[in-house]
Image (tube, rainbow, N blue to C red; front, side):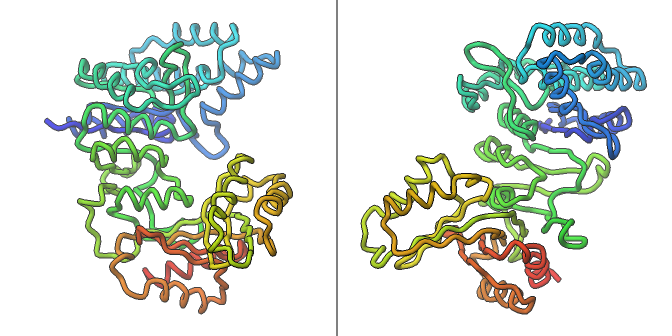
Length: 438
């Protein structure tokens, strides 16, 4: 018997119909022994996610606004699932416990985590699996940072006691105080990955409402082709540049353990989805795996004669950003110029301060600022062994009348990053996709 860890997202646990699909999926493969669930998501357009309702409930409680009616709306969602499916689960006592904590001024992390908590209790009872709380198993330090090795040890020891279990995603607890701590949005993906590593799973199945990854954003490119196989490294590049099917931090625990991820569709369980695996086992004859991008960025370029001979120039440039708490994405350079590419949201109201510090510490000949730049990543393991990729990209954009403001190929040779005006963002992606795929 093998082991599969499966994670079901919010859309997969939204109501009784979806839970019935989960049961069919789990029972179809006896290797699916460890299940991680999110809080119920939207059932239809205009509906609310349980997590959002819990945030609202806490906000109302903190501002002395009546919140019991909203809390009743939340509990009614779970109770409806319970009674519609005939699940034997004690939810009432758990509702009372949560309400009491809310009345006593519990933390926001605690109340928000209860969406996943109640979901896991319900799913465990429906599947006949053990319920295992992630409090005390997924561990954080006092600054809210995940303790990966301590978590792996705690999960491994606990799950060894359970042949089959359901765990709530999204949260854990402080290793010293035991207080509930939550991961960022999409954190259930991370929980599933941590569980897969802890039980040394053969595969981590991430079930959502799409049949895997697509080669481009379907809101930009009509009917983009699905990605059947992709490496962890490629996924990291695409996730960073905006592909959002899988939480990017979920990659690392399974990558450490060399466990493949299979992204599947709860509503189309026969679809094979996308398999994400290591570079060493990943084989793909295609040049391009995917295209992704995001915007807007601001490019600040510093010009100084003989800059390349000035020791410490790059360090002083980046020290300005470090001192102001601003992260950067790229630093293209020339002999006498250096550009920093920064997400515009990172700069906010700090642009004048950055320019002032650059002038003070770097003594440049000139500084230019170009706003509203979009970055596009062309990603594929085949890029490193293909001749003329950059030429193909530039030709496609030239034919579309799009000017390239920046072009850079990473040293890993699996991605080409280019910058275009934000107004050209979508046309550029369409042009590149057509050049490689159509």
